[in-house]
Image 1 (tube, rainbow, N blue to C red):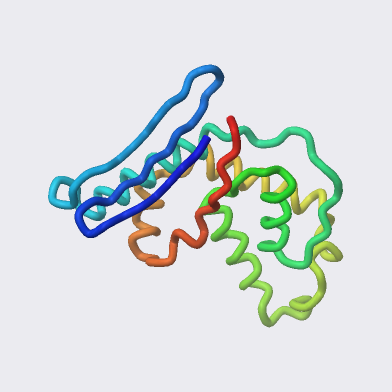
Image 2 (cartoon, helix red, strand yellow):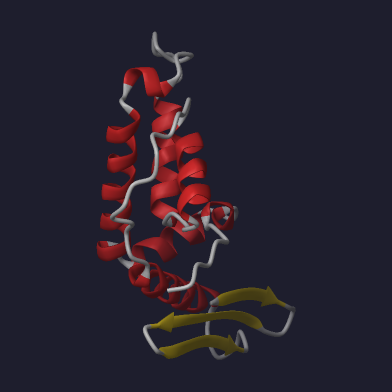
Length: 161
């Protein structure tokens, strides 16, 4: 399974190849801007992204206990351990959870002392499942439109399905 994304002054392109069981599903958008507005293209990219994320199974076998000091750190470890991306909305949520700790009395305590690592990982996977299965591509396109750096929260891990 592979993905590439490129753009030039005349075309924007977003290709995703997803292997489902024995068949392969290719999805590609390659439209001149005059045929598809940049927001229309963003909606299409979000739709392709959401369909791809829906295909990824949530791991049922947990590895070992993952030590972590921040939510984003836990997310990085989960991605590495399971070889899966986390949803854009999950990555944003983990960042928000880390920011919400700033100014608290426990701000500098490692999170795995406050929240048991197994509970924390289970929470991340529950949130991930909700984002993969229920998120609207229209909602994501609006978020992406308002954040020119949105791609920084889209993981470039493409596992075999």
